[in-house]
Image (cartoon, rainbow, N blue to C red; front, side, top):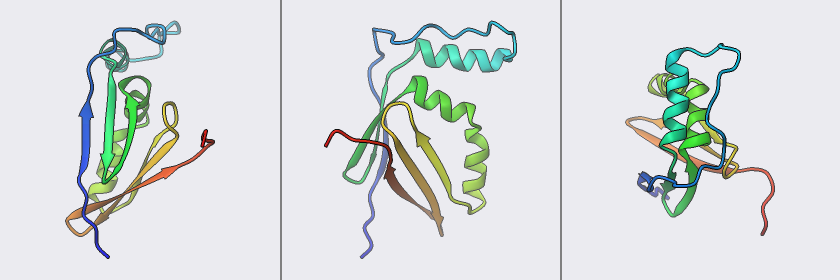
Length: 119
């Protein structure tokens, strides 16, 4: 059986309440670009809904998307474009792994849950 589902990413409204402290670089180890990305994600924090078929997960710009960017997302996208599968892990908000597997001119998305749940 071949089921084709859309992969959707939707940005929610900005969060008015901050749940973490603003980013700092007390040791001066980060580049201006790295600090800029951290500040942007902190100041523009919002929920991001990722929907694959009927499954939907909610992550946040800070820390979830920020962690993907810091773990070298461009390299992973390059690997995907060369026909290699990649894993995007969201460990802070929802304990989900999205596996992206290239198949001809399409990408197969698989959701994997890990950790503990309340149900």
